[in-house]
Amino acid sequence: MAKIIGSPIPNMPWEEKLASCKEVLWRYSGNPVIGMNTNPKIARVFNSAVMPYGDEYVGIFRADHKDISMRIHFGKSKDAINWTLDDEDIKWVDESGAPFQPDYCYDPRLCKIEDTYYMMWCTSMGGFPTIGLGSTKDFKTFTRHENAFLPFNRNGVLFPRKINGKYMMLSRPSDNGHTPFGDIFLSESPDLTYWGKHRIVMRKNAPWEGLKIGPGPVPIETDEGWLMIYHGVVLTCNGYVYSFSSALLDLENPSKVLYRSKYYLLTPEAQYETTGFVPNVCFPCATLVDAPTGRIAIYYGAADTYTGIAFGNINEIIAYTKENNQLGDIDADLGRG
Ligand code: BMA
Image (cartoon, rainbow, N blue to C red; front, side):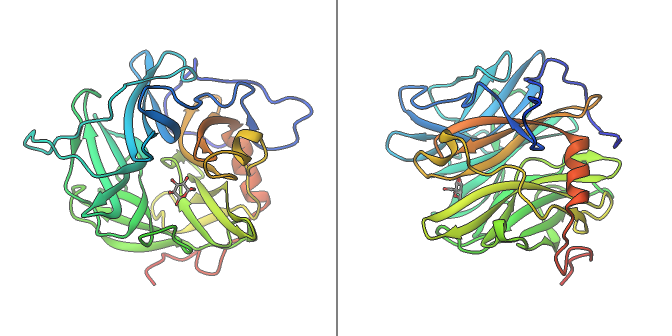
C-alpha cells in the first residue's frame, strides 16, 4: 500500500464501486454534477478545479458564456456535488490592486502551496494563449501575476510543494489553434516568477494518446512517486477523442517517469461525454483525495459541456499503472534533451 501524503477529507463525495464494474475508475451515478445554463450568462461549465476550504468546498470553474467567450467563475459547495457559481466572472487585479483582466481564460487548476492558493489557467497574452498564474488567500481577492511563460503554452499545473527548494510546474507547449501535437514538460522556479531548467517529462506513446498529451490535475504525492493524471488525445476520422490515464513520476526528479499505463483509465462512453458542444472529451483538471483511505474523486470536463466525477482508489490506480507499464524511449531519463 502506498503512503499518500495529504489530509483526510472524510466527507468528500463517494460511491462504492458496483460489483459488476471491472474498471479501475467508475462514474458517479449522479453525473453530470454541473449541467448547462447554470447562471444567466453561463452556457457550459467544464474543465474546472475544486478543493476543500474550511468546512466546505470552493472551485474555480471554466464557464463558457452564451457569447462563447471563455471565462473563469468562482463557486462554492457544501458537498462538492451541488455547486453555486457566482453570476460574474472573477475580476483579477494585479499586485498593486489595479484591474488586470485577461481577454479570455480557460482550463483552470487550483493548488495550495503553504498558506496560498495558486491558480493556473490558459490565458490570453496579447491575444495568444499561454499560462496564466494567479493567487488568493481568501477567495475574495484574486491577484493575477505577471505572465509565467511566453506563448504558446497551455495546461500549466503546479506541484503542491517545492521540490529541492524550487516550485515546479508541468506544462504543454502548444500553438495558436487546436494544436495537433503536444508533450508534457517540467519547469522550475525559485519564486514563481522566473522559470527555467526546462525538462521533458514524457511524450505521447500509446495509440489512445497518439496525437498529444497534457497534464491534468495537480500531481498527488505518494511514497511511490507523484501520481500524475494526464489527458491524451487520438485523432480519428471524426475528430479528436480525449481520454485520461496515469503515470508515476520520481519524487525528487519528477521529469523521470517511473511507470505509465499503456491503457487509458477513462474514455468517453457516457452520453454526456460523447455528446455535447465538443463530442468525445473527458478532460480532468482536479481531484479530491482522502489520504487515509486512498479514495479519489476526479473532476473532469465532459464534451466541453458538463462537469463529471469519476471515483477510484489511489492504490488500485498505482497497481494498474505498474501492471500495464509501458515507458516511452525518453521517459526514464532526466529529460534534459
Ligand atoms: C483543448 C482545450 C480544452 C478542450 C479540448 C476539447 O485544446 O481547449 O479546453 O476541452 O480542447 O475541445
